[in-house]
Length: 162
Image 1 (spheres, helix red, strand yellow):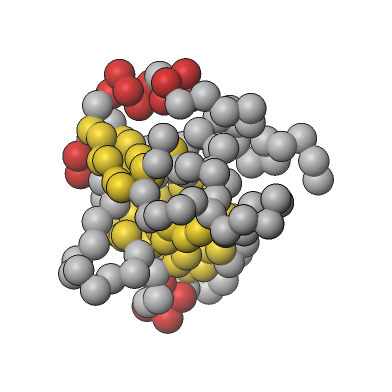
Image 2 (spheres, rainbow, N blue to C red):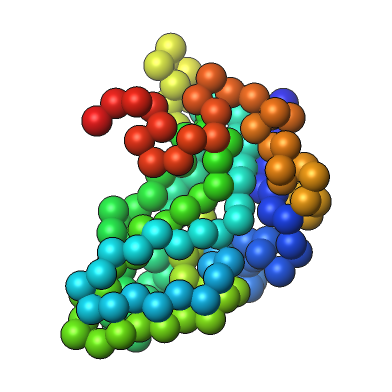
């Protein structure tokens, strides 16, 4: 299948671009969060993706997050492989001495889809895949079954390697 699919169960959680010139899609958090000083937390997005071989998704903090809010992605850039079917979960770290609060649906991160070189030496797919945005609870719940991969939907450390 030569398309990238972004799926969630609620339309408000769909990643969005504010302009046609934006490189990345803003992602929202699914719940209210409180991050204490020096705390590392995991935050749910309720987003899953399908990408063809030769594509990856990179998730970055929005550029104003550290300066305005004192929060950073703990791993700087979250990289999701084409064969991952699980929910995108972000790891945030509060590097300030203040408690930080965000309401659900706040845009904290941004996702970028990018091609990469596959091991056989060819570059991604022959053309840029199309997008399909899906808002459907049943599809979300059965996503890993509908778009199976060897890796499946396990979360962090899901390849079983350190």
